[in-house]
Length: 98
Image (cartoon, rainbow, N blue to C red; front, side, top):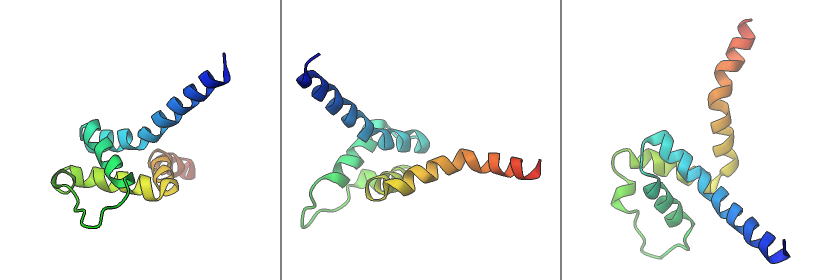
């Protein structure tokens, strides 16, 4: 295995890991993964002077998904801590009462 192959595999893995928050937000909100990935792409693109948020991101269930994707882009630690807190909170409550 050459160094170039290792670099290509690492780059592919890094690209897949960057998509994980968008896929999780899409599953939590019941939105298509393509829409969530488009939200992530729009948020990470260089800002344009007169850019407005697309309509699909601001109406219906897309708004909750857009909020989650925005948190994952701007504050990734808060996003991951929140996702870890959701299943751990009932466990902590159960342990406290036992």
